[in-house]
Length: 310
Image 1 (cartoon, rainbow, N blue to C red):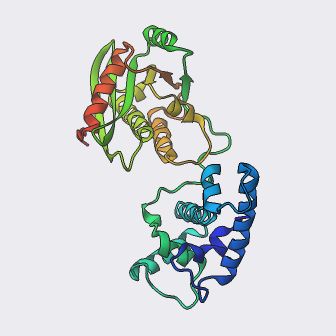
Image 2: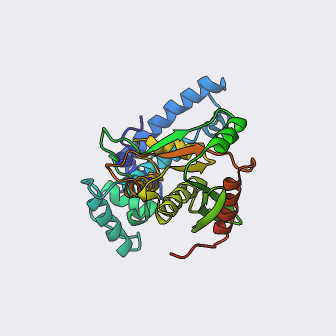
């Protein structure tokens, strides 16, 4: 029933209940939708026909229709703000935001479009939104990594102990004291020979998943500096299974631009004619694996604002 609600309900998200110039037709249609929702709530809860709609919505754990419309319009505006630059609508959306911003989101147009109404209401800046590319990889693309996720903790520790790669790196991310940061350490013959840290910012703006991938990017940089591009076997230990499973994903989702950056750096580490692959293992943290302990310690320092030299 709310198909293209961001078009015909755009005026309903603004304040005011007057009929003149306030979308009287849309409001009348919305009242009919509210009656349909009321009938559904009666069937769900078994209430009396005279029961208040808001009371039925609470018991059925369903938003009131006006709030549902507001949510749908807000979601549509967010999605439009994440469109990539090559999308035909991206340029127009940016122009509408600039127009509304110049008028402090209170400007009046003789014939405002639904997009003008939504931008004035939600004030979402497309320039500050992460862009989601519709296509991330060539259909026949294959990653330069080999992943291994053990069935349990003991097997993960056994695989790590039996590993014999020339260079081994471990990465980790941490969220502590309101900050988030990622780190990586590199080891040769069981001894730490280098580390890198990067502080992303506040935990209000970043997630642990982001810093986990940032740690992986730092790990690839450590392998470059240690001569990993000149031959030899390499492995990377991660304690986040979500990051490992995202290695070969084709979907375009939030935060995947970091994974694309990781793959681009990995291509420069392992040339196209090279048949080597980076072995990525699930290494459960805090379980006696020295590399993971070192990476966790560095990640906590990064989350507190300590960043390695550029």
